[in-house]
Length: 310
Image 1 (spheres, rainbow, N blue to C red):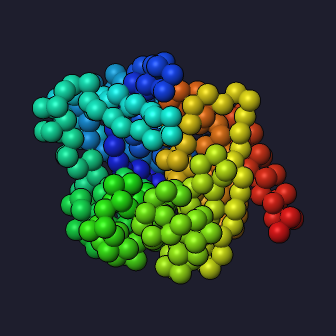
Image 2 (spheres, one colour):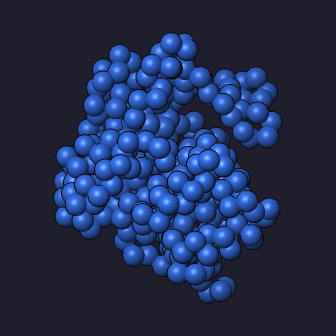
């Protein structure tokens, strides 16, 4: 039984950038969340839905990192999309298998309560959900709680839900039912109707639930117990691509929160994970003991330095 469960999308991506360049065939979706937890513990299980080609596409990643997956092979093919970025950093995506495939299998819930319950237990410490507020999985929250009585439930709030006024109350209700959530700056401004980062932070504090607040290249805040703890981003000269860094840092923040870290330490661990994730296209391929040790060292040093500056 794994201590951390990650449930969400399974996607392979081709990425098209504003300059016209394209990179092809990189792992995407919630694998980035696994990639945020893995540097700090390999006691994580990825549970989702995909096609029979899943092992061909994702198998090497799991083998190289010594972690497990439990995949419901219910699609004819694993989702494969083209992600197109604009000059503003916004993006849109569409399936390479066409509109019919997207219409039939795109809405299929990639997180189901049965996935969580079947792999639950008293030892589970944290569960990540990549699920819209209207998905069926949330209807069975009580059953999942019973199956995982000691776990913290985390939702990375869907961008589309924050932009829809009709969904706002549902999102706020969901946040009150779970333990920790994550938003980025544009999502927070849309959800709370705020006009600045500072106003958004105050709105999150007023809501009273722990939140990992992502600030893009600037860094992140862990907002907990009435205070926002900021840590700057960890950039590297070898940074290549920021795709998935938000998911990656969110996964690391779940780990830090569940392990009882100081909120500032959680943000530091999350930012270090995101910095490593940005070193290549797709998720970091293999966390060796040396890489893990270096990341923990860097995160601890950043935490101590920032704490002394408080």
